[in-house]
Length: 138
Picture 1 (cartoon, rainbow, N blue to C red):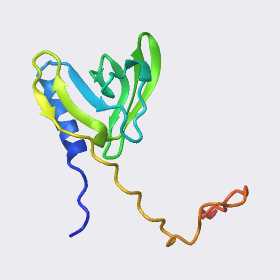
Picture 2 (picture 1 turned 180 degrees about the vertical axis):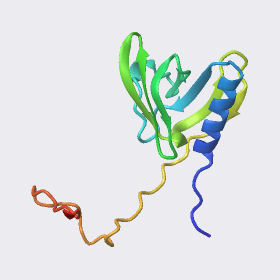
Picture 3 (picture 1 turned 60 degrees about the horizontal axis):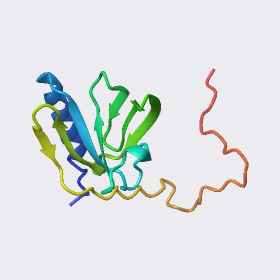
Picture 4 (picture 1 turned 60 degrees about the vertical axis):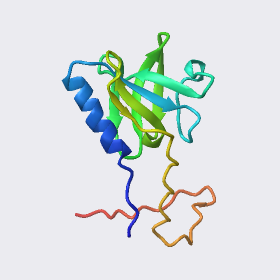
């Protein structure tokens, strides 16, 4: 059986839309100590959690992709670019009534795919720029 992608980002998008459609305020509970999480450390609790209001009025440029959740937000008046892998989201819920979804523990991020060239190239070009595979067509 082929590797199955995580259902978490799909559920996050669905619950987020449901919360907004009902006029409620979506909040993310994030495991701040999970790999790849970039959140302002001064707002992380002692148990390495952070709760973030992700309503359209609280964040800018929200993108909920399969691999990353990105947005800009203000924390104590200072802007911060937040990056969270969906596997680090522990819950998404409505502030007003607590309804939403609890995901449980953080998921490990997926293993990166192997290089397309079979792994012969370690990526080091000795400081020289790589040649382009693009051709000029006249």
